[in-house]
Figure 1: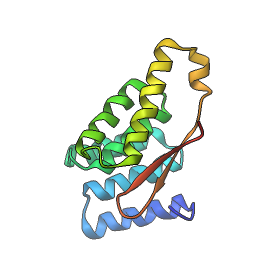
Figure 2 (figure 1 turned 90 degrees about the horizontal axis):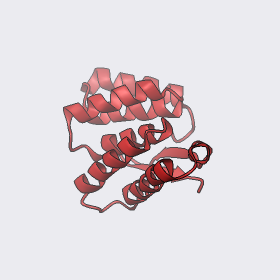
Figure 3 (figure 1 turned 90 degrees about the vertical axis):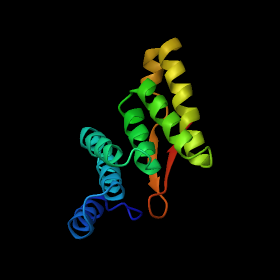
Figure 4 (figure 1 turned 120 degrees about the vertical axis):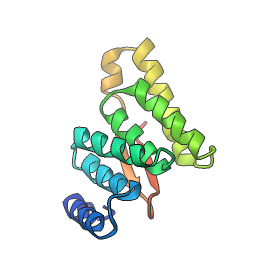
Length: 139
């Protein structure tokens, strides 16, 4: 993923699933690779499965929020980021920033120009270490 080889990363995550079993961490990684490949529907489905397996797995919850933001589902993304923030006890600056952006976008989509909300900043998901993700924005 760090090298931008998302197809290779996806294959590696599938291999990891076959070796260590399908768990929240592996599903979250697969969902992240799908997100980077632009497969938003698949990413959302996989990340929801990860959360179903472990509702307290913060990286999966955060990544689902990222997918929802990319899909333009700002209200749902806001709720998901609030959940991730609560699960993380507010310790992650990245999740706090994700929540702030989701709040801004959800407020803008309700009160602002709908065209401006669509043309707004793009989000990028960056994996840092094992199960640690950062959402970057071009605000």
